[in-house]
Image (cartoon, rainbow, N blue to C red; front, top):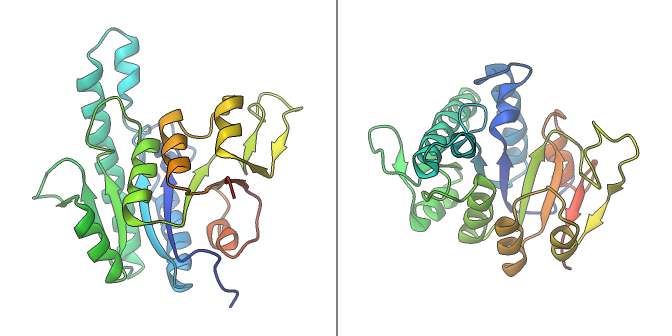
Length: 239
């Protein structure tokens, strides 16, 4: 078996990825496939933390854009991430992968509360750790949560699973002439205003020297392939 390039990573999956072809909610077959990709990475000896978004269920910014309260909207979005985390944990456990959900919002009847100490303990025990509830604060996206958790657990890279196979100069689904990048620096992503992760997330990753690897989350086996240095992806790194 080819040796992985990274030993500990943070996988960021959007809530939209869990929808599959549905217009809303969770497609269990998609959650199962993402779980199988994570299981493949675990079989290679890679420690995996996961941050999942909540856009398939609720977006706080959508409430704010219609005149609603942004803070309440973001709290509702955080609860959506917990729902997604529980669904993905269920898919992983079906594959006999020891998994724990840690939430930034305390809800002990449902899952454990997040602390860096607990996260590191569970990873040392070989568990997949799913981080829910974003950062626990309004006005921060789950991209920012992914960069924050990656720094806290000492992840060697952030794997951003998207709808396309890397970073493009424009949306390739709308612009057939969009240019695909193989490599970029964190600074170039910020300067070019590329919609990879939000500014706070990219800046936090840069400050902690964590590369961001953007790939298609819809490619079965793609996660493991990129972990060993192959596959289509864009690497954002200052090294």
